[in-house]
Length: 525
Image (cartoon, rainbow, N blue to C red; front, side):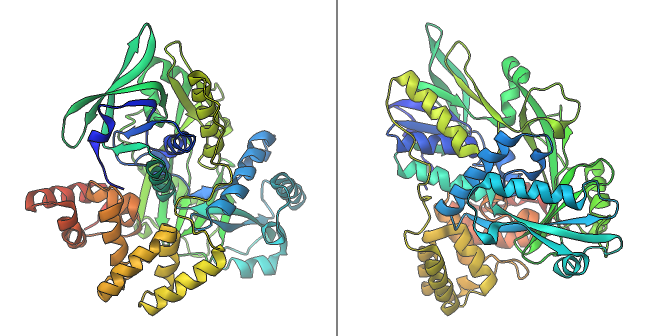
């Protein structure tokens, strides 16, 4: 993946996609596979907003059964099944435990019925994905971090997990391989119209500070929270904020779905890169969409609710990292953000520009297919969707279990520890072979970047060379999320920046600027 602003200029496109999150990436990938001439631009880095601030889950949304949103759950579960098959390196099964206490809002029988319905809506699931019931002692042994007083038992059920930023990156790479022009740090500054119909856009290269024009027969805005910048968009969208905290390891290989005692909301406690991810909050947001922050009240809420369940309560000083993001929901008068539907819709005003509103990371592929269907209808093209069931760009062609075992064995021979190897394979799929070659040339690259986290130096250098990173935080937040998984000191940042400076052509002044920006984002003294 190489960034090339000039690839957008002096050529006509069938489709211009504005926005490099999950919806923009799926739309560009789908359209390019159908044979359209596609461009996608993102004003910051790929997945730099909501699409790197999710709970890292591919799931049906068990909680939506309470509001009888069966259609949404069925849609998401269908996509979950497809993604598990088409992207086994990118999306992997994750079981969730749901404890039942004497004072739980939802009792054993109601939960049993809900989980049975969830499995039914998933359709033809394998036994290892079905829900299971445990008595109090067995459940406590399964999740030893939980308080056992009043515990009546619990259930486990299956959903799936991903690394959201890398999911987006892989789809962008797939779009490029299918012929799309993909450029991050490129801002769309205006829409060009002829006779009231959109025919292109003005753009600005945020790196070179040069302007240009893209000619496009169709335009899709998949700009997430920035959709509200226009008067129309603000009428279509409702923004809510969600935050997550990174805490020390408290779980094994399974997650927990818990209910907040204060307001009855569901939140998650999830193993992620060897640590624990907890979240999320859900509050209306009317602030600056460009600067969404984790606030003290958000932290207090999550810690208090998590500590209702933990034998060893967490304190604020235990927080390793945190992040905040905005959800875009369809406008709704419901007073509770959590009660607003997470479903998606497409808006097309009189000038013919298409706007993607709402949605979920799990069902983004299907929604993007509808976007491209609408584009093709306007272009009078008969080009059916190609993404459903198609192996992901970085998925190996071979049987995944056998391929993964062989890749793990090769990693071991190269001196990569088992946990780092597991995540390296998940992060890069079949491209991991090229990373292995770099370690053959320099065995020191098999060593971890940080002793406590499963990332190696070869991964960092590969990402700097091949994944369109422009700034240090692109590398340390989205390509490899060290900024939220470690308390990086200024010395740590300097060491990491020096390692990639030759690849990214940073002189001393640029290097110092990058370090300062990262330090403000997430480092700790």
